[in-house]
Amino acid sequence: MLYLREDTITDPVDRFLREELTGDTLTATLRGLADAHYRAELARHQGADQTRRLRQTIEDCDTKIKRYRAALDAGGDPVLIASWISETQPNETTRPPHCA
Image 1 (cartoon, rainbow, N blue to C red):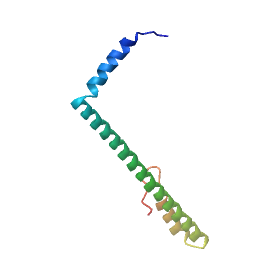
Image 2 (image 1 turned 60 degrees about the vertical axis):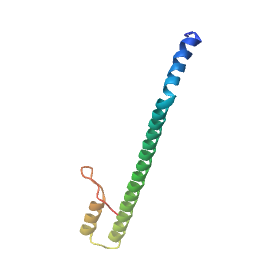
Image 3 (image 1 turned 135 degrees about the vertical axis):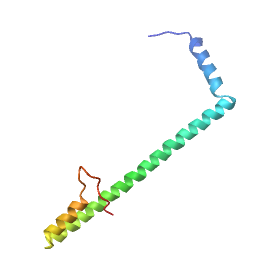
Image 4 (image 1 turned 180 degrees about the horizontal axis):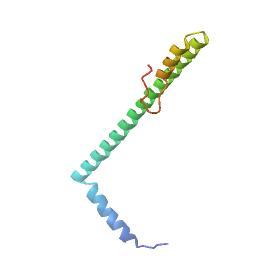
């Protein structure tokens, strides 16, 4: 446990708050907080948009692969269908193709 006199804590805190929350300093502080909040919200929103787009791309690829498998089951050319599937499935060493 640590015991301190109240004025050793409150005086510096009060002085800091008076300096930071008055006049031009207050305006700059509030503007900085608002800008930081805006940037954080914008980044969160853009991240969510990217996630939706990527999930849709994965869903599109899965749909194509299901169709290719159905074509194979219906007697389609296995070599041709295999090439379609390999174009649709991402390779670990390459960037996945756009499936939409």
